[in-house]
Amino acid sequence: MKKILALAILAAACSNSAFAQASDFTGWSTAANITSVKTETTPQDSETLSGRATGANLQAAYGFALTPAYVLSLGASYGLTNDKAGGYVDTGETGILKLKKQASVYVEPGYLVTPQTLVYGKVSYESATDAVTSSVPANSESIDIKGVGLGLGMRTMIDKNWFAQAEFKQTKYDRKMSSSGTNVDVKTSVIAFGVGYKF
Image (cartoon, rainbow, N blue to C red; front, side, top):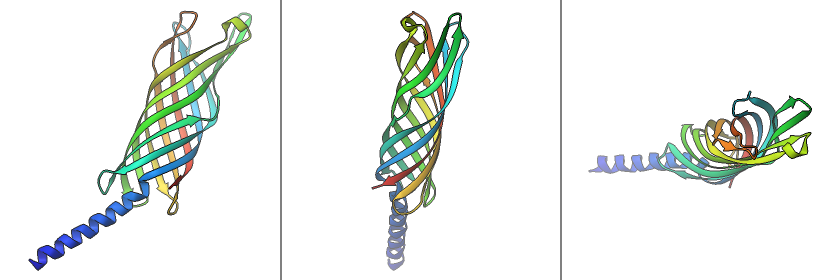
């Protein structure tokens, strides 16, 4: 009986210790990220227009410990920059594309590979505005687009509250028709590096 009791106490202690490790990634957190964004816009029956840009976003999230090693986070992010998404030159016309108002809500299941380091996957619902500014004003327009993003990332605690993170995410937006009646496909690939604070 004493052995069983001792084993139960040891198991509880180990479990509490493990959940204490998971707690580094639970509760409220916020972060600022620098992003490298590649955007591809493909009008129907036309060549793909692509652009690269350096941007920034803010995020806020709340994490739950599912087990001693697994954490589930729910969060949202919002882009602070208008990212260049390509350009074109046509007969008597030039145009610049930008991706604006980028926002997302997401779910992140994560696994502790060490007590201070979490690797995670991400599934997100994304929204943005794909804006064209043309030298012919009548051809300038903005299209609101929505899509699904998939990503992978890693988050490491620097001390009790501060953490660093890195992430790669790809988003495929739903096909949308422009005012001219042309279907447009938009895809993005984003590499992000950030620093955050856990409350």
